[in-house]
Image 1 (cartoon, rainbow, N blue to C red):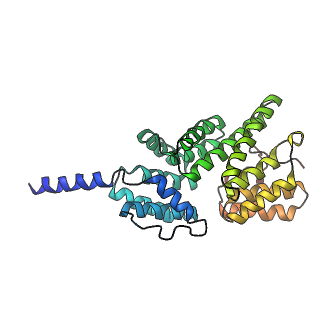
Image 2 (image 1 turned 30 degrees about the vertical axis):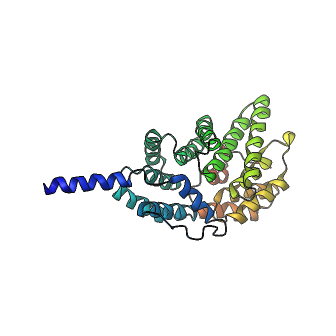
Image 3 (image 1 turned 180 degrees about the vertical axis):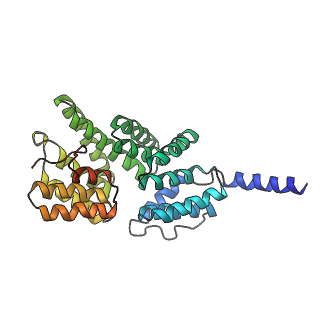
Length: 292
């Protein structure tokens, strides 16, 4: 009888924990903390798991991956089926470039909750790095549709447009003239949407900087405008490595080897496994190098 009593208590607690995370609200709340502490008391009226999850999101926003991973692990000890914490675990693995472990967890999360936007974005980033640009577009397209219905948090909706544009840009680069015209227009369309949404966001400025840097001269390349946007991205988020990579390429194009070394090395200092930085530095150039 005592065993049965404890089993009932355990099942009750599990039911209380399961699905208790209002992930859209918590993601938006975590992102507001980056915007001059707009949330007065970010942990007000939160249960234990929601508070831990919010702390994990804040740690991710501050590039404290080890701390975030520990918080998500602790949630899963309390609630092994918590979808949001499973995504958090996978996102930490993605940021550590351990895609082999991250992918099956993300696929499990999406299967369990097809409306959980963050998992699509994490998987779309991986698809992009793995050069599956069509796959990245399919995943980000789902989040864009979710966002239009109010079923995605603000930041992941913005990221979806930005990553969709990036994948379209790669398809345009490797396509013929017709592909360049059609897909290039698609890139600017999605970047214009997120510029209207959040003009000072580092993702927005990185996307616009990359666009004006990598688009062919015949279609409007403007390295000065690109440099301005990339510098804004770094100013808004000094720990975001990708803008340093693209800015380094502009300096190399302009013949400034010292500045190139400074910025490419800064990117690798922030993220030693950053695939785009490694691609540029080794001159493999799959993710596009500027010709000198």
